[in-house]
Length: 175
Image (cartoon, rainbow, N blue to C red):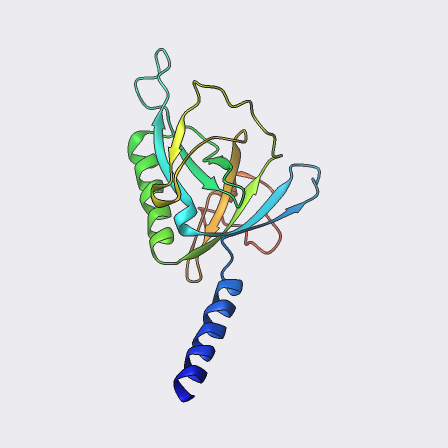
């Protein structure tokens, strides 16, 4: 009987833990005069990212973009990007900072900006590999990544804008 009681307590704790750590949760705030904000609570395993090179004439190979791919609870891929062009070193450094945040916690909270709009998914679309969760085509046009946090640290590029998501702190590089 004592073993059954212990197993029941473990089951209750497991179920409670699952409810405290959502796989995907989003809250969207109405647009202000600048943009619409989205606050996501998401499991780290539902995020993958990369630096992409965009070749443009006379750019001297410096035009890279950081892209993050987020798998929502409907297995749709949300794309978030750093808002500015970067050289490969800056993009790789940014990717490494985000990777540290993702590895230190099972869940993260992030602030995205922009309106969600579904995109046409065609046969030429890039497929994103989420490892054990499967492979999926991008479902939404790109959002801008403002801030990503785990319980101990944040990474932000929101000094680019005037506002940030409710509950997030505005960061400035010169402070």
